Image 1: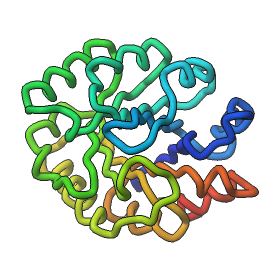
Image 2 (image 1 turned 135 degrees about the horizontal axis):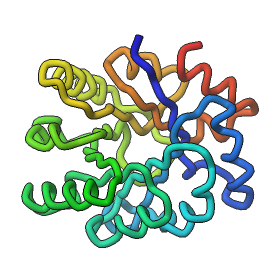
Image 3 (image 1 turned 90 degrees about the vertical axis):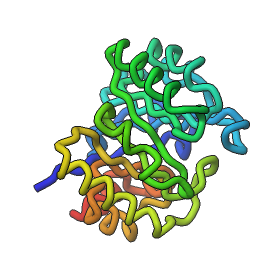
Length: 219
C-alpha cells in the first residue's frame, strides 16, 4: 500500500503562537511542514521570508518550501541556509527551459531535494522533460496566492498523468497537491496517485488536529 504524507501549511497557522502551533504536528500525524512563500508579484499576496523558517527549523518535520516568487534563483539559498529540506519553484516563474535545468542543478548541488510546481492552467505536458530530474511535483489545485479556496477538479487528471508517467518511466518524484484539501477532497486526490497532501485551514482551524489529519488519511 502506498504511503501518503501530510504537509500542514503554516500559512493558516497562528503566527503569534507559531512554534506551539506546529511543535506537536509530528505526534499528531504530520510528516512535512509546508512553507508557502509569496512575494506579492508572482502571486497577489505577500507571506513571509526565510527568517520564519529559521525560527522553527528545530521542529522535527521535513521542511517543504514552496517558492511562489518571481525570482526563485535569487532567494532559494536563503531558505536552504534556514533549514529547507525541499525547494519547490514554479515552472511559470522562469523564462526558458535552460534556466529551469540550471536551477534544478543548483538546488541539488546544495544537497537539497528539488520540486517544480504548476498552476491550475498549466498542463503536465509543459514539464515532461524535467520529470527525470525531480524529487517532487507540486500540483496547485487552486490559484496560488490565498488560502481557503475551493478545490479545482481538473487537478485530478493531472495527478493521474503524473502517476502514470512515474510508473511507466520509473521516475522517483513524489506527487504533492496543494489547495482545497480537506476530508472530502483528500480521497479522490490520493486515489488519483498523490503522495503528499498539503492542507492549511482544514488542519489549523480544527479543534483536534490529530483527528483532522486522520480524516485526511482516510482513517
